[in-house]
Length: 403
Image 1 (tube, rainbow, N blue to C red):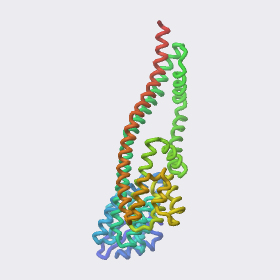
Image 2 (image 1 turned 90 degrees about the vertical axis):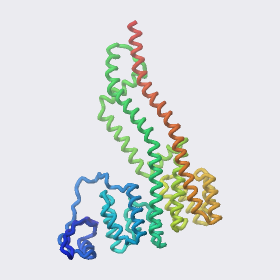
Image 3 (image 1 turned 135 degrees about the vertical axis):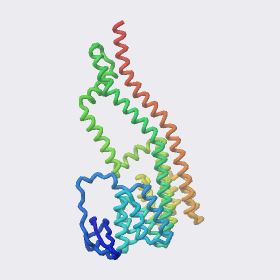
Image 4 (image 1 turned 90 degrees about the horizontal axis):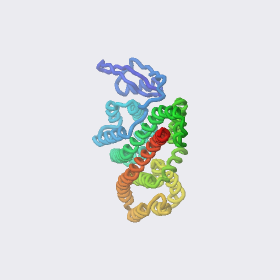
């Protein structure tokens, strides 16, 4: 697919200009003819060099909420999908969303369903999004699926904000502490160490170690920056790979309060996504597979896929399969789902569980901050206290020697 810039004339003589993604010029001409436009000029847009690192090549969750909700409202009002996409395209501001909508509009005009058109962008629209749309299209209730997807995205956005909001203060404390330590090591210690050398006194071990670190950082500042940059790069690369994410999640899961928070976030996503998919009419096996890939926790993904393929697909009830894995699914979860299966009220039970675990995430975040703040303050105090002690001890020795 390439981007073409066209200039066309309408029947009343007005000139229209725009951009469209298509395979070739003949597809652009066909698109213009459908809209009663006569092509005057069609040129392929040249790709700009050096645009590999673009911060706009991402559709944020808030953009997806607005897109889904507005599209649902227009479909409910009886506006056709193609016309609705046209309206959304005019309102779109970010290049990434414009690019997606232009491609989706072209595909819909070629006869593709909305779900199939959006499925070509898995980076922006995950399987749970696409399958909810497919279920809505199949049942004739597309606006219902879109409203449901908008509500789910809104919940996901709210949960992310809570997590990041709760971690903001501790992160500020950590960065401030690192800034103070860096200032002391790079500016204060080198100047003080010169005084100690001139005094010709034997320095304590702690002071010698810190002066050694200070000398290395100031003398090899470029190497230090490379090492720090390399560490950040490796950590960033690890987050993007399955093995790296698994290792990070494994380490975090060993921390007491963090383990509980991770479990409750995973359970919130599990129950919310399963509720949405089952309500839309997606079969339970497919719903479990989609949920496994959407839950955001590799340990849970593995467990859900294992029980789906090994037990649920062979006739074992979901509640019983969950009950056999108490380390991942608490008794409350398995028991309520078993009750839902017996009463034929599974969707309502999943909705109740989702609401329960959302509240639990809030409570666990509060507990985490309650524990984390004093620990961070203690750690920062110990770091700065150690640096201060490494300076005070030699000064005390100098004063004692003078006396």
